[in-house]
Length: 549
Image (tube, rainbow, N blue to C red; front, side, top):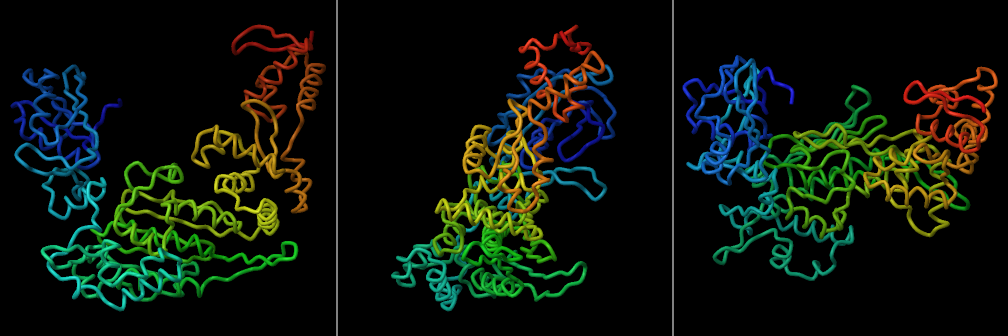
């Protein structure tokens, strides 16, 4: 591990000249565990000067036992003695805790950066403890009961009727419509009964509460909607802080007013293709409302730009989730009660795979692959780019789906979209795009080959895939197909032999350059010629070359 030169959020220096009181050590390690984890170096001054660890703190087993005995739950550390500037330094490495950790004397601490960029350990405030518990999924914030106001006062009967209307409109669970008001509230876990009195949960207040109570008890609830033309703001209504049901309807109407459809002819049918995909918007926006962190300030924002729609929500991605695995990781809702209620109403995907629906909707309309790469620990940002309409690509998708009488799976759509933009891709590259194992990617690609919309070029690890000649013919770009398909193996072997006739020798690097392939494919071509007895190998290692027999 590279030696750090200064303190950061994940690096702490502690002097041990006195030596250091162990209570300070326990607090620092707890603060690290409750933030991002890190390494505490005992025997280093704050300015990075190495003073060395004291003899009484060099027993690694004893130090680990003391830390475990004075932290709750016990922290498991990785300890090692390192030599810095000819002095011993004790490195105590702690991972980010999956639980809220405290010292044995019940102190919760966290790390933060001061204005000058240096870190400090500070006590956690009650709301910060709730935020931390929420971020590690130890509690469900939306299930918390607000016991200071009765449900009959906090919940708006008009919002309950709006909820019933949404169940009908969005085909939610029909049995919900047969329940009485009180039964409906309890069935969706929007209220809890305590000592004979019903009190609203946070989920209930967000979905059906009067605005004044939402502002009082869930001040983080806020949504902004903007339409931009470059740097010019075309639409910018006031911030919305009403119930989530009201906000959903308002933003949906604002969004619908900006949707423009272009129709394309597919056989006897005309297929509408919108500039902004409705289903992708709905799933993305509902996800932003349901999964945001209501303990932090900041608004859910929807921005319609010239060629993109951007939806952002405060709170950051859950631990273990990233743009590279968002399609394959198990759903991890931050507000489980709220998410479950929204699914049952019909506003969100009931299987919890709303991201799949976003991908499918975008790609089926010929748009680009959804982009979560700008997301961070502070916010989730979904960017839905709208490419110029590729009529032939959309026509191909619609034709194939009608021929199969079923929708093309999301993995296949991602493969086709990748090949449409990248022209050629290896199985490994396609596996990363669909975020699944290579064996799963192979099954998807070979199925598309059987359909006749994809074909392979080359063999072994060098094999690449591209859209088929049928696809290029549909768009009238036959020359593009020929360029992308490149040379056959016979043609590549012929080029190698012609080079040998002219220059008597050839290396693997020469084959890479001549055939415009990678080193694996160059090795494969040379191996074929060796097996045929046409060439011979001279030398070994990097200096090896090949000559005619």
